[in-house]
Amino acid sequence: MGPTASEKDILEIVAYYKKANNTLLSRKMGTTTEYTNFLCKSLVKNDYLSRIGLGLYTLTLKGKAVVEKVKNE
Image 1 (cartoon, rainbow, N blue to C red):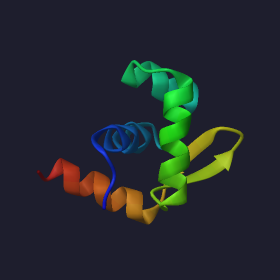
Image 2: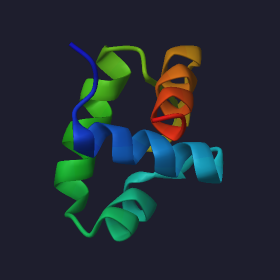
Image 3: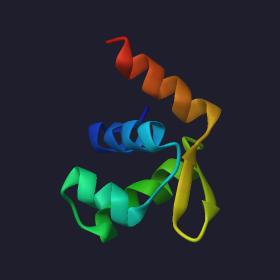
Image 4: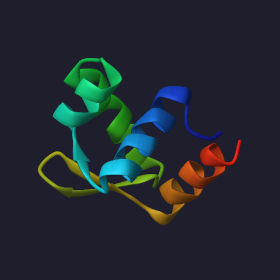
């Protein structure tokens, strides 16, 4: 099973900014930082995001592939 709609939103935001933290993600999504943290942990676990610092995320190759697929839909 692939990422949920909210997880895809996170991937698109991270793709746009190249790297993002929970504060930026929650502002852009209009959600709490707790919720974006939950989603990011799931995306890291499933190899769509990579954690590159304290709360800072970037896309993996798998995450980039999802973003490209969403753009082409």
